[in-house]
Amino acid sequence: MRQIEGGITAAKGFEAAGVEAGVKYQNRKDMALIYSEAPCRAAGTFTSNVVKAAPVLWDKKIVEESPFVQAVVVNSGIANACTGKQGMDACAAEADCAAKLLQIPREAVLIGSTGVIGMQMPVDRLCAGIEKLAAEKAGTPEAGLSAAQAIMTTDTVHKQVAVEFTAGGKRAVIGAMCKGSGMIHPNMCTMLGYVTTDVNISKELLQKALRAVVEDSFNMISVDGDTSTNDTLLVLANGLAGNEEIREEGEDYAAFYEALEYVAKFLARKMAGDGEGATCLFETKVVNAATKQDARTLAKSVICSSLCKAAIYGHDCNFGRFLCALGYSGVTFDPDRVDLFFEGNGSRIQVYGDGAPKEYSEEEATKLLSAPEVTVYVDMHSGSETATAWGCDLSYDYVKINADYRS
Image 1 (cartoon, rainbow, N blue to C red):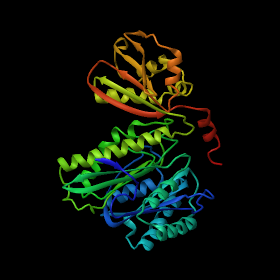
Image 2: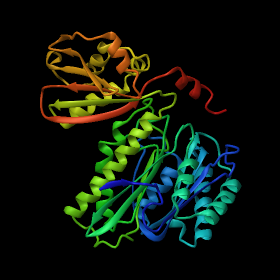
Image 3: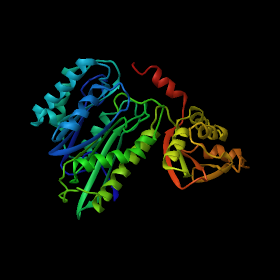
Image 4: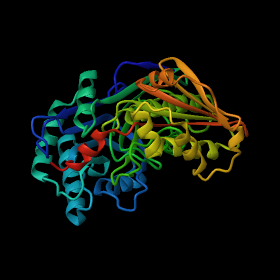
């Protein structure tokens, strides 16, 4: 398995486009299309928020009930959440429009939306956008990049990745794109994430792999502790790689899983590092925990702490905040056995161990904590399990961005 150039169009048979439709924004791309020349098996994970956007309800039904999927239409700017029957009607209108233009069943069209909650969708502009998308779709890397750019809201950079691997002696590819910068605190999902692959795999194993992969990738990130109404992660597999169908766990399934996990963790890190107002990626790695769940809980408690995030922003080696976050996580442990380190810019310092502070240079610590990627490394000395979580620092700009988000 190795990373290759490209994104959502890297896998065989997939096309994409991104266009300016004026859904809410002006003078920027705000609608994207993903299309497969062959029918796809689909899997998905969705927001755990009780308040679910219309596209989430639409996609859950399609993934669970439709025999195949062949297209995804996504808009940015308006979330189509808390919009009642009118919101569901907008999804149906988009699906009907895409189905007609692409000559596929409406039940083969998935819908995605991201943006302001509570606004109704301008269906006329959406359908006009879909016409543009259908006309411009292509299987080029440029088309994939255009789609990745079109789904951005407060994101400062587009997020895409592609890898190749071998399944059944055939070259197979996974391509992906996602968006996410604020309102990030997933549970079995991400903000908006789309994965395409040409591998031939059963729907059951595709869903199993996806659910397992999110546990140590998208479920281990947080920007602000808010779980969106629109969180959606979809995987489409069209089978055009030509491998024998993967129907059971084995060597080919393991190769696919490794590739999917790489893609998921790559994009999860990209989202965490691009958190609203962020100046750095804030990683916490917990090692030698008693259980896997303990390791996950401890790591995520640290990256979710507002005080820890503020300390990272201020380049302040206030290690007590990090110990405090471990202590209120709900995991029982002996603080006197914990070793705490900071890592960054290729350097590492220990700041706590044996129940007391360690000697270190404040100047060196400040320099280390000024890195674009900072890691808090925690050795629990209570078992053999490991987990890593990703977040970002908390800056003044986060409040500014969200104070005037609707404007």
